[in-house]
Amino acid sequence: MALCLGQVFSKAKTFRPRKRFEPGTQRFELYKKAQASLKSGLDLRKVVQLPEGENLNDWIAVHVVDFFNRINLIYGTVSEYCSERTCPIMSGGLKYEYRWQDGEDYKKPTKLPAIKYMNLLMDWIESLINNEDIFPTRVGVPFPKNFQQVCKKILSRLFRVFVHVYIHHFDSICSMGAEAHINTCYKHYYYFISEFSLIDNSELEPLREMTEKICT
Image (tube, rainbow, N blue to C red; front, top):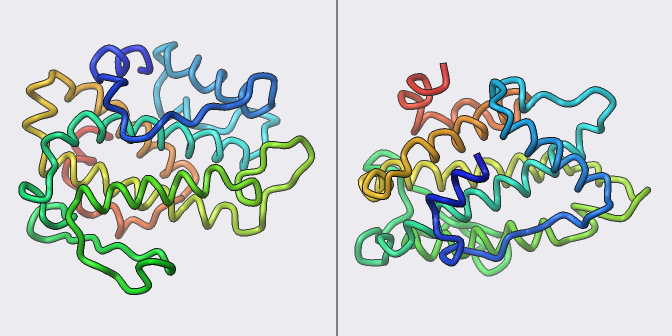
C-alpha cells in the first residue's frame, strides 16, 4: 500500500513532516516487518496481528506513528479543498460535530473550522509522538502506564479525519482516483483498532454503514 499511496498522493502536500523511526532500533525493525506484510498482499486482518514474541506496546506505537503519517498525507492532499469557507465547522455531515479541547489553549470543547481543528490535532499528536516520556525510543526505557490510553485518544481523533474526508471531500478523493487507496488505508486502520479494542464502537458510528460495506 505504501507504494500506491506514494504514487497517488503528492508528498509535497503532506500536512506535517513524516515521523520516521531510527534505523537500527527495534521499532524500526518492527516497522519494516509491518510494511513488508502490507506489501505482500496478505489479508489485512492477519497483517495487524501481533507477531509472535513481540511487545504489544511496541506494536501499537509503530502503528500509531504509521497511521499518523498516512492520514496526515491523505488530509494534506485534500486540504486545498478544506477551507474556513467550505468547512466552517469540523464535522461529519449534519449529525456529527467535533469540538476541540486540549486542556491548555482550549480548556472547553470549542467549535472550530475543520482546517483549524486539523492543524491543532496534528500539532497535538506530533507533540505526543515526540515526547520521550510517552513514546520512549531508547532501549530499556519502559512505556508509561497510561500509554495505551494515550494511543486510544490519538486513534479516536485520527478517526475523525477519516469521517470528515469521507463525508465532505469524497468527490475530491474520487476525482484524484484515490478512492481504492484511501479505502485500503481505512481498512488497515479499522482492522488494527478492532484487533486490539482501541476505540469504542460508539465512536465509529459516523462511518458504520461504509465500514460494514468495505470491511466485512
